[in-house]
Image (cartoon, rainbow, N blue to C red):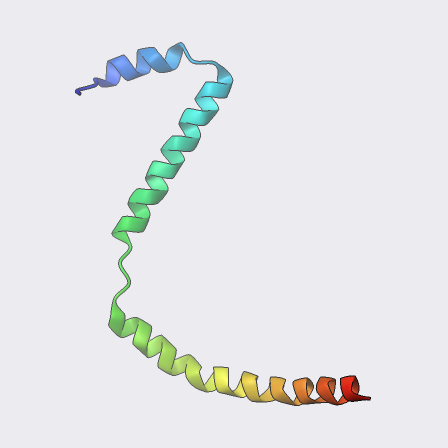
Length: 77
């Protein structure tokens, strides 16, 4: 099915404001979908980030354990 730009413009001119809002939303969705497809995550940088943040994650988990054990002690009382 071939649709010309002119035919689309004529169709748009006949739409209500509500319908135009729906068309605008669909166009925004198409743009987002296209951008998402073009954004490819390379495994190497992701692995580097995971390694970089692994120590921070461990430190936060350890810090949280003190709070967690304190809460457990309070619940036992």
